[in-house]
Length: 114
Length: 114
Image (cartoon, rainbow over all chains, first blue to last red):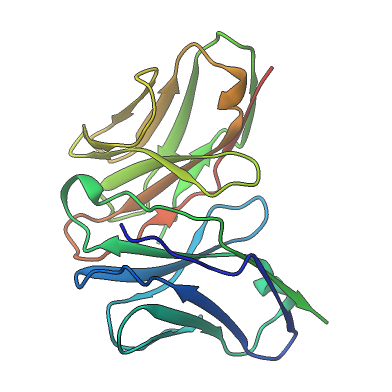
């Protein structure tokens, strides 16, 4: 799986959009970008994933650049409960022995303040 | 829809002992993965189970073993516990039958080895 690079920490004001960047310059054509977050003392929570098109769900939006070398996770109206570690993960289309494997990096600690 | 549940939530063991951790998959999921998360680190993949067989493994020694049952629940067994085994152990489930089904995590078991 391709390596990802994220800033170690970011701050965001409550009610504002949080934009979390991720670089994955060695991504291959069959690799997806996944985002998870982990709130203290809980398991990682799936947020969103995409291949090359921008994606949106009830939690967030994922913007992937045209060359697919970077992406941005957008939380449109951050709340205090969005304070967490956010992980950007690149993985091949699941199948076989790699299906259950996600390679986590250090992630970005997002702090939402009042 | 019932999420991934793990038991116990906390456990204290002595070096050299053996431990069994349990996981119930999310409804409709047939694949289970286990992860170890040391303090301040991202989760590390241990192994995955599909159709009651281990079919993918990370860089963990054989004293880490598991089982998957016909109802897709799973156990993680660790023999000859070492102090470095102290960590949060996470279980994740997904469906091998649905392409790109994301992994859904439980909240983990906090194991302390003294």
